[in-house]
Structures are given as structure tokens and as C-alpha cells.
Image 1 (cartoon, rainbow, N blue to C red):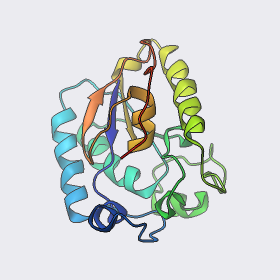
Image 2: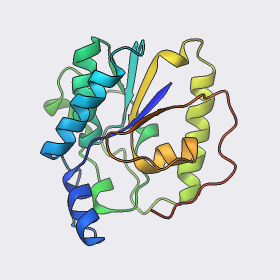
Image 3: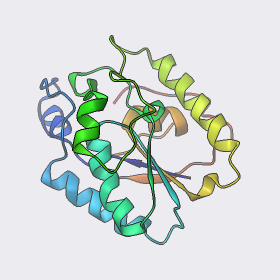
Length: 184
């Protein structure tokens, strides 16, 4: 399968410049983030993707949109691939708001408030990644899947730190990373 980190968000733009949480809840993509999403769509076009699993955060949904359009494949929203809850940007939008903003997506399988109420321990993300890895490994067509996710979740899946708009392959049948460094 392919793991794609969302494009640059308003949070990423400000946090990178200041190294301080700018207090932006569920940020949208910047102009650069939209360009990164379009570039990813073009790059992934020939990869045989037949399913997209996306985090419910707006930045991930906005990143998945051009890929889904380019490939004509369905999007499945799944909060298991969400970011580690550690900053203001990790407060999401309620399910009803997401359903109004994205009427073509099915949000019925997620709770109204689908993000944790307090900071999420790193081990929790590792555990979510292990569960997702096992679920994907059980599918015969896991290699046809694109997962639009986040820095922390992709790190937990692969042990690799990725930049905005970067994608990499992940074999869910392979061993999980032996060690993960959470330092950014």
C-alpha cells in the first residue's frame, strides 16, 4: 500500500516558522498544500490504486480529493489513521460538520467527536498502527490501497519521518519498525 502525508496545512506553515502551536483547530491546506496534493495525485496516478483510506482531518480530506478525482476511486474515512493528538491542530471537526462539508463521503461509521479528549501517548499511536497493519494485511488486495494520513501515524507504521505531500510504500505483512524516534 501507499502512505501519503497530507499537504502543507496552515498549522504546518506557522509551526515550522515559530516552533510554537499557533492554535489552529482542524487546519485547512495552504496554497502549497493544495499544490502538493495535486502533485501527489499525478505521481500516484499510475500506481494501480483502487481504494483510498483517509483520516477525518480536513487537511487529509483536502489532500485525498484530487487523488480520488484523478483515479476515480472511492474514499473511505477511517479515524484509525488520524494524527497523534498532541497539538491544537489535532482537534478535529465534528462528524456532522464533516458530512456537510464533504457530502459525497460516508462519515456514518465515525463518532460525532472522533478525536481523543486529551494528549495521546505515543504508544497509543503505535497500537493504532499495529491494529491497522493487521487489518490491512488480512486483505488480499492491500497493495491497491492509498492511505492519506499524517506524520505521526506514518512514523508509527514505517519508522520513517515524511514531509508534507511525501508518499512511500508500506507492506503491512512486514514487521513493524523495531524503534521509533518521535523527535521532529
